[in-house]
Each structure stands twice: as C-alpha cells, then as structure tokens.
Amino acid sequence: MYFVKTPALFKWFYKQIVWDIPSDEKVIYLTFDDGPIPEITQWVLEILKEYNAKATFFCVGENVKKYPEIFSDITQNGHAVGNHTFHHISGWKTAKNAYIENVERAAELIESNLFRPPYGKMTPAQMRELGKKYRLIYWDVLSGDFDKSVDYKTCLKKLKKHTKSGSIVVFHDSIKSEKVLRMVLPEIMDYWQTNGFIFKKIASN
Image (tube, rainbow, N blue to C red; front, side, top):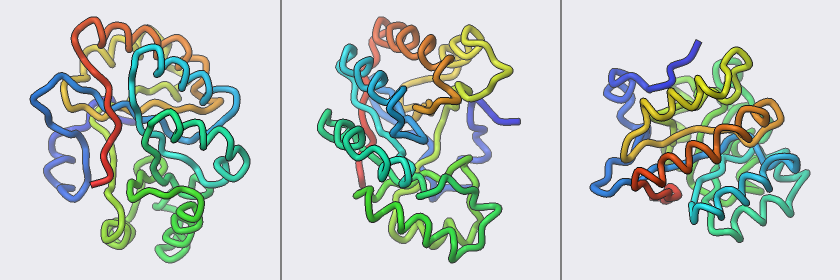
C-alpha cells in the first residue's frame, strides 16, 4: 500500500524532509528514481528535452557504475542528480552504519547533497545522520508507475488530480516501470504544459 498524495500529517511530523517546494509560479518538480538504465533513461531525457523540462534523477550507485555514459548524459543535459544509495536498499532492513556506508559508497560516484531513500524508508537514526550532510527529498505525489495493478489511465487520472504548483512528483526510469511510464509521461507533460506549468530541477540548497 502507498499514498499517491502524501498526507499533510506526514509533512507536519517530518519537517526536516522536503516534501514539496511552494512557489508563486506554476512549477512542477519531476523526479526519476532508480536509474540510469539504458532501455529507459535515454528515452526520458528525450521526452524532457521536447518539453524544455529540467528534472532531478535520484540514481542508484551500482547503475551509475555500470552506465557512466548515461549518467553523464543526465548532467550534461542540465538535470540535477541525487543519491539513492548504492544497492537500492531499504533503511528499515539495514543497520544504521551499514546504511550510511552504502549511501557514502554511492556518493563516490554521485556528487550531490540531495538524497532520497529507496521506498522512502529510513529509520529516525538514519534520517538524523544523513540530514547533517544531505537535503532529504521525498515527494508530494507518487505516480505509481511501478504498480503492476494500476493501468496507465488510472495513473494519469491520479496525477492530474493531485499534482499542484510546487509538487515534487516521483516517476521511475526503471525496467519495472517502463511500460506505464512510456504511456504516461508524454501525455501528462503535455497536459501540465498546456495548463501553464513549467518543469524545474531541485536545487541543492
């Protein structure tokens, strides 16, 4: 189970986390987790270019190590990158020191002070420690592109309903999400742009 729209209570309770970025202009912060992956990340970059959009890619260290040229394409196209651990591990299932070490291993390849935990799962101790060095980025809207039980039309409908100015929206440039993402991303970006939204990357401070 997951929330498409992050409940206000979560945002109130975890104030040290960035859930959205309020703005006077109509701006959406697109984020992509789990890449870089050859089969999908390059396609995402092409779609973003079509809409003159900038985004933030939370990259898995082992994927950056495998595909450094694609990681380079992300930054050379003007997008931001963030740390998403080296092995895409759950903080809830990993001891604090081992988790921090995994993040730092990824940091050797990903130069960024933005961090998003896989699955959004961190213990309070992990959160406190990483919060000393990283800007902890979560989300306002979770697309659900990874959910095999959700068809793309439902995904699209929820994105239209819940996304507002300042929303941080999560997609995944991964094999698991590829089918839905290829259908949803161009259509939802066209919808948002037609409604006057622009797309920015998340700043490092």
